[in-house]
Each structure stands twice: as C-alpha cells, then as structure tokens.
Image (cartoon, rainbow, N blue to C red):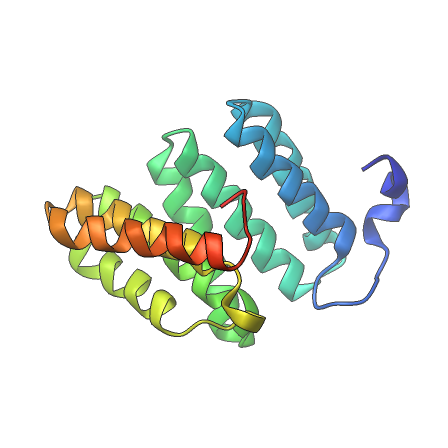
Length: 178
C-alpha cells in the first residue's frame, strides 16, 4: 500500500484489475483472518471507492465481492448480501468471468446463512464445477464454502466430502493459505 499511495492507487498494470486496489483487498482478507475486521473492512471500502472513482468494472466487482466477504466474516449478513449481490450483478452484466466462481461461492454461502440454501448451494456447486482460474487455483476455498453451506443445510456427509476435496485441492495447488 505504501508503494501505491495517493494517486498510485489508480495505476494500471498488467491483468484485468487495478493491482493496487486488489492488493488492498488481499491485505483486508489477511487482516480478517487475524480478527482485525474493522481495519479490513475500512481498507476494502476505500479500495471499493477507488474502483468506483475510476469506473473500472473488474475492480469495482472485485472490491464489492471483497466488501461482501468481509461483512460475512464479521457476521453482518444483510450488508454481506447487499455487497455480494452487487458484485454478482456486475460480474453478470459485464461478463467478468474471471471472478464469477468466487463471487458465486461467497454469495451462495451468504444466501445459505440467510436460510435460502435452495438458492445458495446451487451457486456454489456451479462455481466448484466450472473453474475459470488457470490450473484450477482457488478452487479449494470454493469447495470449502460448499462444505460450510452443506453443513448449515444439515447435509453432513456431503459437507465432509466437500471439505475433504477443499483440503486436497489446496494441497495439490500448493495454496498453503487456503
């Protein structure tokens, strides 16, 4: 963040998103894992505003997803649903296929937590079945969301299988953080 402060947050590098904006989201995810939810959310909201300011669709969708994911992590279900549904609308309307699986996985989990498993679980299952990332990286966390949703829906054997798949995928892809 120090390298891309001020107007540097708007710099465009290689890739579909604004790297400084996405970097802030990844920092926010790490902070949330450490229990620093408010700091994480503040960083993600600032990144979301930066993406909005430059009207960068991919980054705007990614940061909406990040905000939703962080709200869900801290237990703010209504706010999580709003942000994740906004991210999904952007992904679908702009055909941003790179992040469709992860957005759908987290939205599916939020819907399931809201008592709407019949809507949520199919979203996560689709995300798990149709990876977009090169080599399937990032599929472990999607399978983990599926395991969580299935557990919440009382489908414990299926949840165990999805959790086992999540661990196997993370190991195979050498995604230790996942």
